[in-house]
Length: 354
Image (cartoon, rainbow, N blue to C red):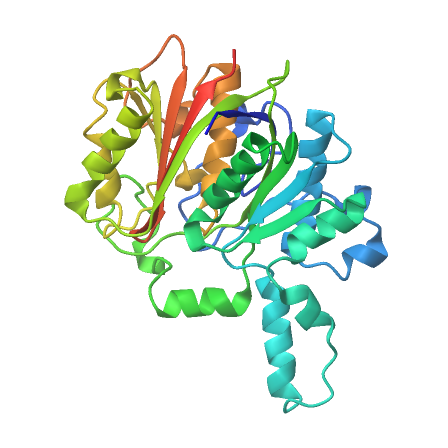
């Protein structure tokens, strides 16, 4: 497949990523079990009557997609593709609670209608009055990567020129309680979390919505060229290095050609060993991490791609993201590696858009 360009990037996350020059104000988040997104004033974007009926995911995605389209200078995308791990889980919980409380009788369908995973893509299309290709991927932690692959195919096949691609996940009280019970989320006594040298299991859980416009053509404001993506569901720890090197070889690159590697260290001792193994391949690259800023969640890679886009465009790396002290005068190629609890490993290769 030929490469496509990321022509805009927008994100609502635990950092104040909607504002300009947010690089200078990134804050370490390692003391709370759960990180909430910093939300905008929705009244500026969504009529209050509509906003009351929308879940948090839909509201965050509507605003993030608005910013992405505005930055790209596009009113109507040729396709809308959204990836999510949990979907509109707040409304799912409300519907299930209604089922139990009302003994399966006299149920209003509203929460059920709004609880489906494709509500986000549907609401964005309704807001834009866009009747183009509309698709939602629900592939746990590789949902955004599958969405990007689909967008690449749409553009390469001539079906679309500009595609709105996004990823969003929200938190819900009951799900967070269950995650605490099964030790997905770090215990209070193991905080503050040490993301790079953790000796305890569990993660700090976050939420975010990240949206991008992928285009066939490079523009003056293009952030990056999306060169390639590779996804594999399961990997043994011994296979990780060959997984990475084979991916680079396929793209006619070696580890020496990679200027920066963004790794998804989450503070979970059990699954972070994959990142340590991959890190050994890149002795001369700038090594970065990001989940100490965003938390871990199904589509956390959206936050990392958003950060990578800004690193490529601004040609600077925030100190707070650096694992080693390797500094590059020019950042041309960035490799992103992510997985969730040892499953759904993804590699994304971005190149500076000259």
